[in-house]
Image 1: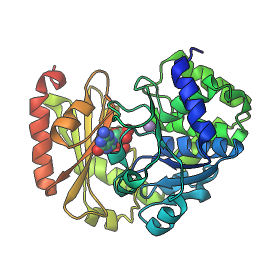
Image 2 (image 1 turned 135 degrees about the horizontal axis):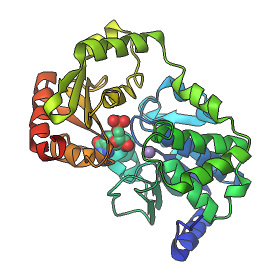
Image 3 (image 1 turned 120 degrees about the vertical axis):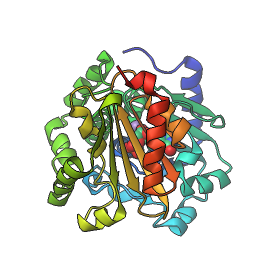
Image 4 (image 1 turned 180 degrees about the horizontal axis):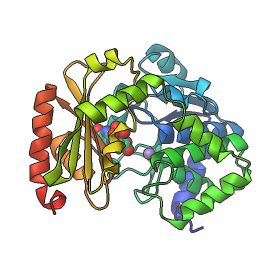
Length: 344
Ligand code: 5GP
Ligand code: MN
């Protein structure tokens, strides 16, 4: 496999890691399998290197990721703010995984800004910010976990990966590619999978742990959203689904349980763009926006222009401060603006 890092990057990384004793490892808000897989792998690797590690996610993650190795050591910032501030006050390095901007950590980011220590980024999102001593960001890679694996490979550490570290990497790559159904056609992806399998991981079990552990309520909600709530703008090959907190209560849906629902409309023939709008559970008046597309439609450009967000070409997110009706109007304006890329 080709090297990901230049010689300069590799020696800077090695020097920075060598001098660090205590590392704060972070990920983005709404942590997903990639964010937490990247984190739990690096927590373990850094500990094997003799470092003390404080691992913090900005907010809550879905229950179907609790089985990942070392998750009991990951702190949730919104729930344990004071405890995290105390534990992390003497860190000498911050390692940002699966995100390249401090503002992707929300409130945790405000705390990180107060730390006067170097930061390293390992990520695959476009447009990381200036500031870290080293930013290893490759948007063509399928997952933050692939970036982590490739960096470890360049450091000569990949062969030393433990079974559990391999599980974490696989989980990250699998979830960010929808089980290797999108953004996953580069041969390197399968070279890595093959090497992870040699570590003894059970990929089928990892798949079931993540995708076959839904509550019955979530599937009833899915039926309802597709049957009652999905609006198809056929002319634009676009679908809109809205989801309110009243419906969340009615169907007994927890945070994270709506992840993935945005993908379903793309299974309808000729659909190019799917937009899922949901009321934020914490912040009143905020609508969270998820966008997914196929082929060349740039969700991230639409998200940046209309939804205060960004992300990848085929998967991005954002937020609006308005009512659900206004959010739907904004979506319809966005779709019209991008009509040339959506219509036949
Ligand atoms: P989701 O729909 O799962 O919330 O987000 C999909 C993708 O878009 C994820 O890769 C996520 O990191 C990215 N994303 C979500 N919200 C934002 C945002 O506000 N800004 C940026 N830059 N990316 C986002
Ligand atoms: Mn990711």
